Image (cartoon, rainbow, N blue to C red; front, side):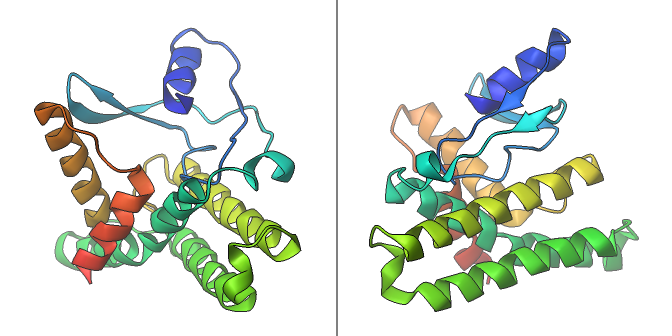
Length: 192
């Protein structure tokens, strides 16, 4: 829904405000509209929102499964950043060291907050809210990296192709598919 509204706002030259209700994906502030059209995953250039309103009182109370999706999307950065380095070595593709550093800092912070929270991640309370806030912060920073790059390159690689393929296969067969970040997490494990 976020990407459909972003794309529609861009096409009609209307302002777009982002109000995520769950820490589930890293596209809340990106300038990319990722959508499924006639069963195919497509990404259209769009524009970043004018403002982001992310209220911890809202997104920290989202179903745990949605936050797990955000964690999976963030953990996929290990693979996409390796892909970017490989592309640089094989094809000479330009990389941005500052954006790579930002993405590595995001996943390092995620690892630290998970380690600090321990079993309290799932329990309601301050540790859980701090954990979900860090996930949201990482997702927003990853979206900012995409905006600076003008593409999803700093945040999406082979692990995302797995997710997109599985989603398209499920749509073709008329069966349900998993949340994007959950699929990205599985794709990350396959890419290791």
